[in-house]
Amino acid sequence: MNPAQVSAFQANSGFTAADVSVVLIGAVFAVLLAWGVWAMRAAYSGWADEQLSHRQFLAVVVRFAAMYLALTFFLLS
Image 1 (cartoon, rainbow, N blue to C red):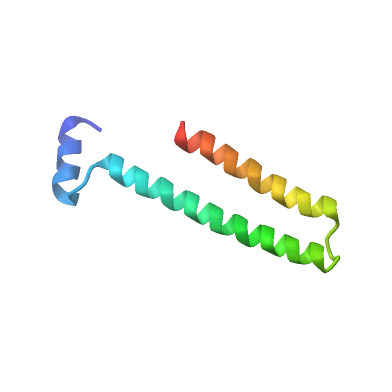
Image 2 (cartoon, rainbow, N blue to C red):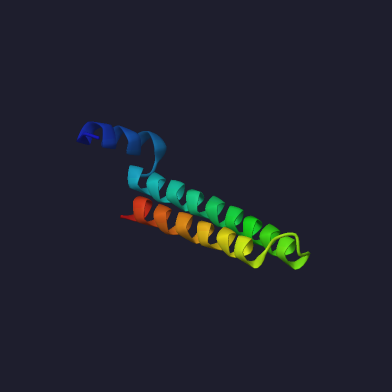
């Protein structure tokens, strides 16, 4: 944004665009972590009830970790 746009945004909203960015990125990570906890808990329940194999349970955990690392790299770099 050019300086006039930054000034107009800050004057109308009361905070800077960087503050909005931090809040939105924080919300993305909060939703991702909540979804990850739900997915891993559901996978653990399936594994404990012997509906999922150990390999399938680990696949869920590894996929979540990979997604978290990828989003961390893209959003925080």
